Image (cartoon, rainbow, N blue to C red; front, side, top):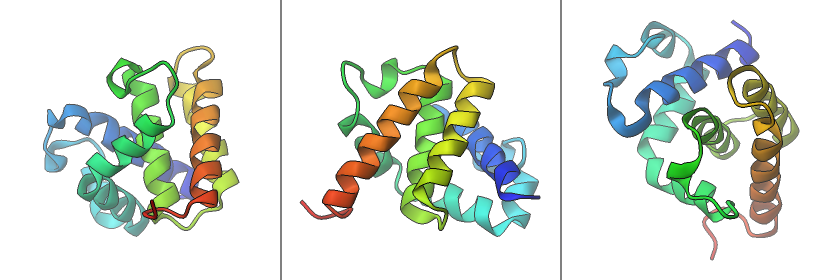
Length: 133
């Protein structure tokens, strides 16, 4: 399974975990979580750092709150921010993949919103390395 397919599965698992309505073991693709190291690494990072990831997203939203963002876009951002913080893929690749997810699963122009939030996140974290205030 290539990295693109793994990202789709990561998004789909995080989407199912939104608001903790489903246990990880009961999500679709749990078998892939157990067998693919990259999927497991990003999901585990997100689950361990949910509050931090959501705070990072919220800090880069204009005129929105995290809960007002449609579920698809919210979880694409969670997937992407988690991968930016924990993964080993170049930033441009993560943004491109997030845009592709938004075009496939999101609303008509949501890819622009996703692109903007992620670019702002990267710009600000590059200027101020993660964790430094």
